[in-house]
Length: 403
Image 1: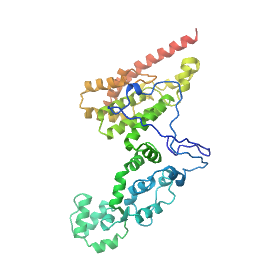
Image 2 (image 1 turned 30 degrees about the horizontal axis):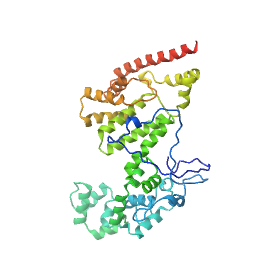
Image 3 (image 1 turned 90 degrees about the horizontal axis):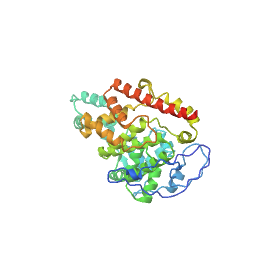
Image 4 (image 1 turned 90 degrees about the vertical axis):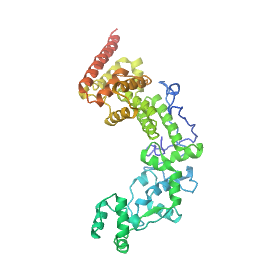
C-alpha cells in the first residue's frame, strides 16, 4: 500500500509500525512451507509508516511527507534525488515540467527544486558540449555538412568531430541555451540512492514508503522490495484477490530476471501461467463461500463466467502476449529442447497450488508450448477437453441440488 492510497474526501488514520523483512530463501523465493495458505482469514496490508489524517482531493502535501521522511547522507529527500535524475534534461531557465512532479512527489514548484540543487552544489551549468548533446542527430549532421566534415558515426563521435573542427564561438551563440549537468557530488547522490530512480520507473511501491523502510531497517532497497513482494502476495492471496496476487508474482519474475536468476524467475513465471489459466480473479471470497455453502448461487455466478472460458477461439483464459514471449525467451535462456522444456514447465506447475483450476498441470504445460508455436489446433483440442470436464463437474453440482 503506497502513501497515496487513500480515499477521496475521506479521513484516514494510518498506524505507524515497522515491518519485519520477509527475506527470500537461498533460492530467492519463499519456501513452499511459507507460501500463503488458502484460508478464510482476511489480511490487511501493512500501513505505511506515517500517521496521517487528511481531507483533500490531491496527493499529500510535501510538508506532510517530509515529516516522516529521512534525508540522505548529503541531506536530500526523495523528490530532490529524483530531480537530480532529471536535471540534465532541464535548461537553466524556461522549463516545462510534467505533472508527475505533483502527483507522485507533491512538488508544486519544480524549478525551485532545480535552483536549490544548483545552489547546494549538486548540479552546475553545462558547457557547449552538453548543449550539443541535446540536438537531434540530423541537426548535428547538418552542422558538420556546413564545415565539410563526415557525417558518419555514432552521435558522440559526431559531436567530437563538431567540437574539433567547428567554430566554437559561433556554435556557442547559435546554441546558447545551457542545461544542467551533475557535479561529482550529484553523481554520488544518485549512486547512493538508486531506489528513487528504480521505483520511479517500476512503481512497485511508493518511494516515500521505501524511504521510511530503509531508515527503519537499514536493509538494501532490493531486499526490502523482495520482502514487500512477499508481504503483498500473502495479503492478496488470503484476501482472495488472485488477480492482484498474480500481478505481484509477475513483478517477482521481472525482479529476479533483473538479478540474473533465470531458474528461480522461471518458477515465478510458471506460477503466473497457472493463474492466467485458472479463471480466478479478484474479490473471490463470496464465490468460494457459495461453492461450499450455497451451490445455487455459486452456479448462477460461476456459469455466467465459465461460458466465456470456451471454446479456445473466443476464450477469456488467454496467455498475455508478453508472458508467452517471456516463456519463449526462457527456453533459450535455460538451453532446453522442446521435450525438456515441457517437463521443466510441468515440474514447476506441480509446485503451484491455485485454489481452483480449469486445466490440469499437463494441459497448462501443453497450452504454453502450443501458444509459443502458434498451434491453434492443439489449443482447440485442449480447451474442448477441459470444457467437457468442466460441464460434467457443474452437472454433478446441479444433480446434488435436486436431491
